[in-house]
Image 1 (cartoon, one colour):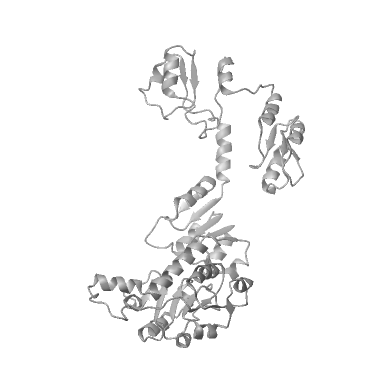
Image 2 (image 1 turned 180 degrees about the vertical axis):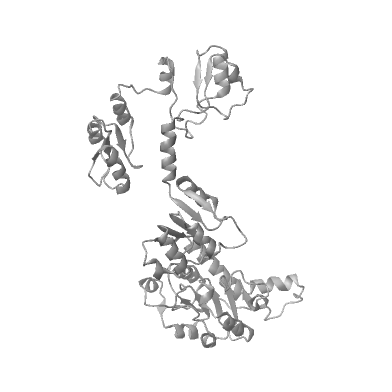
Length: 450
């Protein structure tokens, strides 16, 4: 115990897992305050310590560094003075933007050739491996080793153990943004399902679960009872989805296990809201239809009712679901001057009151609204709620917008409503299935865009 390293932990709220690792190996003293440790306290507590564990919020000043060095009998000086005074200069700093190119190899070759310095010993070079004809190789006063500073059997054993303890993640598609994959690769052992042609089949996914700690999926991967039971059996701890919605995951089955779910609330709010407003304007003002008339040569002359659409000004806008995205859309539409904003859902919301929106039942919303915007989650209660009967309640001039989930709508009923002018038009960002086949009836309708 006397030879165990002594560590000062400078705040009490570090994750317990990390603190336990320290306690198992070291004598730990924790500064037990919610406030950052003051320098005067830190200087006293450093005495006799081998290490400090600090957060990014704690600024380590020159005084603290000098005090730490004092315990080694070292003197803190600037770089130029160090170079002037030292018989041996040992470079052991990390590579950062500030230290990059601290050794100019051409300048080092020149210094060695011209006896400006006596000799050099290098375990690291640039580039690596060093070309056989590099000037450093021919110098008698330069000793080179092939980057083997950590190459002992002991260190390699420890490194391999650390690598083996890294979480193992199966990524269910190969086209996620590289920034996210890099974060995982830096911290985990990853295996990527390398196909852009299809989603990972269930039988293959079940095989890939073996030995994995986590799955990284999208809304296209259906995580059903079979997958969840296999995941739990194989010790999967986390299923993370690159989506806001969770309708592709059987949450009832998840609750029977200890598996945690990761998802991306708020990340997509503004992007989805912007797209929905664009879709609403393009549909109501017949932007796509207008473009088609020009491309096809149908635009011959102006007439009073040519390409007339519905404006937002003094209209009634109805939201089926007023969550984060719905609220953002409403805020963006208010400057257009609608006369009223309605919303339906499980309950009245304070956020709705703050927007000046009126809470009404679903059928009343459909009867009154000039624009019906679907923003509710897909659940067993909302699946297929837009039936032929519901479309029949809407105004014949109504614009229907769906940016939520395709399965909320009975698409055959929507096709019927659009073909027979029961409603004026629809703008869809979501459909069933996705991608929509090119021969699907919705694709050929002039009053349906998306």
